[in-house]
Image 1 (tube, one colour):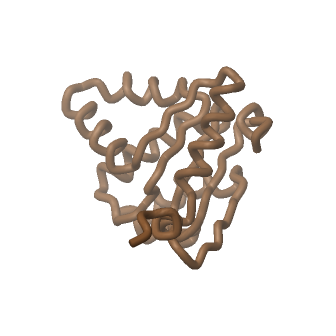
Image 2 (cartoon, rainbow, N blue to C red):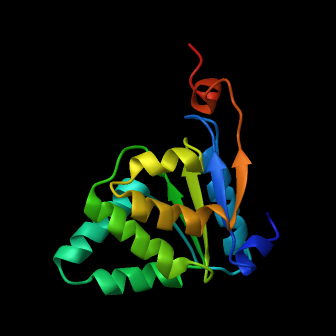
Length: 157
């Protein structure tokens, strides 16, 4: 992963694990590796991305924002599908995923494996489209942890 070949080949990475298992840490470490290889990287939490897309849609800047996300070599989306999405959010995510499909790479940090993603989307058809574009072109890394890293590395009383 640190060689960034998965990025050059336009593959994705799905980091799976419970809260505090280090998904964000590993995703950002892969992002740092990409920056060191002179690649353009963007980190965003899914709630922030959805807010940005909603604002862009309301201000007629949606195509421009999609284009900006398309240009990023590696996009790291944290907190992927922690909660069910509205119909407009589901459609907006499809636009991002489609714009990046086989052109660039995305890291998805999630507590849920791909089969559990379907329940988070408002439309089964769009869920199939999104999952199909991600699942078959991604490396999956399962982080098994019994204790949160925040608890393990936090303040000791």
